[in-house]
Image (cartoon, rainbow, N blue to C red; front, side):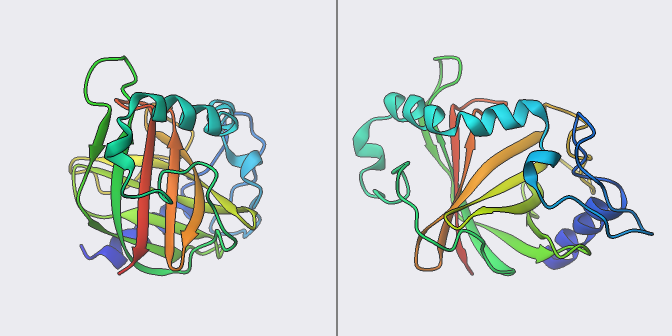
Length: 211
């Protein structure tokens, strides 16, 4: 399956299968017979993820306290929690992405891990919402990008694992749910910051640039 086909298929799942439902019934979910859907991420996010997003800055400070400054010194804009510029909503298209894991959640293990570039894509679903997805690898995040402010947008999604071909509905499995803040940090350069992910790290940073 190509990257475009993969993201488009999961984007259809987001609309037609109810991906993006909240744990408290606050968000309207589109169906094949309706385009009514909440565009407010606060009505879609689970209460746990709203808490994680409220604590984004504390997660940054906690994670950076674990990391040797020389490990991140070459990328000051990427790892500065206070650096962001206008234009937080990326455009649809093909991107290159790379992931960094900061801090050790249990106090054991590496405190800074970087991964190589991989292919990812942003498309629009049937509602017109942006959907971010990664098509290769054993861990493939997929989810919706919601507008918030001019300097930040919000990602809510799930993790697709192994040979799975479709994403779980957001909010169905807390262990798979993902919540992050997307910021523009330079010309044609964005980062997705995932505070307190479920496994391993204190903070994940996903950088993405147009392919």
